[in-house]
Length: 158
Ligand SMILES: Nc1ncnc2c1ncn2[C@@H]1O[C@H](COP(=O)(O)OP(=O)(O)OP(=O)(O)O)[C@@H](O)[C@H]1O
Ligand SMILES: [Mg+2]
Image (cartoon, rainbow, N blue to C red):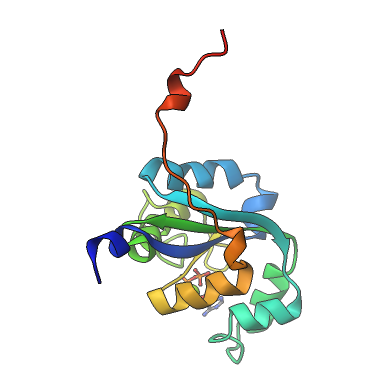
């Protein structure tokens, strides 16, 4: 893989219904922005059972799945695609361990979640998962390439 490709790796992030209902969306998105991850896709969605089963395909037969499905379908979810160097690994690191009580205190889950199942954020766990999950939530034309531009800090209408 060339360097250019590595710098532009993409991953899927979901801000789950607990993040939206606790009004932590802005706070969490800020963490990603400040880390230097670029938002290249974003929308507010509502999961139905079918989407939950597709997204959580590796968990569908697990005992905790019914609760997971009930939770993820319980309210709006913010779906985002983030781009940056080693985005999959970097985002997982910032999000922290699954259990909010065990997650590193500097991570998003460690800072804001006190729960194992209501842990605010989903992030793809491999490049293959990222590709599959991005295509589940976004059409290619919904992902937008853009460049940072210092001009907007200094531009004036006066
Ligand atoms: N044993 C369990 N009991 C209850 N809920 C669980 C259990 N294991 C996982 N979950 C829930 O299912 C979600 C998906 O589990 P997974 O193992 O993929 O964790 P994760 O990759 O850290 O989280 P996510 O996929 O949401 O980013 C977890 O976020 C958690 O809310
Ligand atoms: Mg997972």
